[in-house]
Length: 212
Image 1: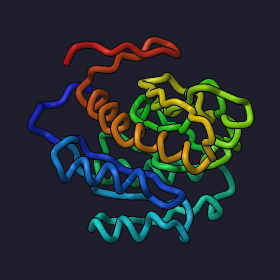
Image 2: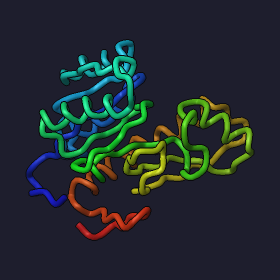
Image 3: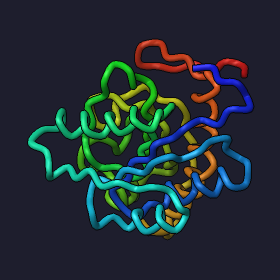
């Protein structure tokens, strides 16, 4: 999806929790490290802490509650209707926990970040502190984060980028989460910019980065 370099990419950010990823993306946009704009945030729950963060950074936020829909298909249709309405280039999952069904016109335009090195510690039920606790229980020496395209299954879409962080002696799920999130804060905006610039080619279940 090549874009004129002067034109910012339009992002709709989907949230289900505290909105820390939204806050990071907004900061990167503000400092010029991500050439983007956020015309809309969509929350899957009315009690998301991220709603307050969206208000604080003066970004419109709407609640489309998963509980209001009988199926994932109906829920997804409502979300992507709003994404089309604001002419979103990319849809960015930032701590978004609901399963989506991706329509054809948004194939390879929906990104997610997961706090482990996929395919380890991913899939339904693996989110937040549960991921980091599982990493520590298994005795892993490294963890990290993965940015991937979203398909119709949890954490199964083509991987765009990964960052590795060490697991240190005495780590808790909280301390490991902080180290992984620091990596996320740099890796996610970079991956978004690469996808927006047309530098990520998808070949089946894999991707390849080409020169800008």
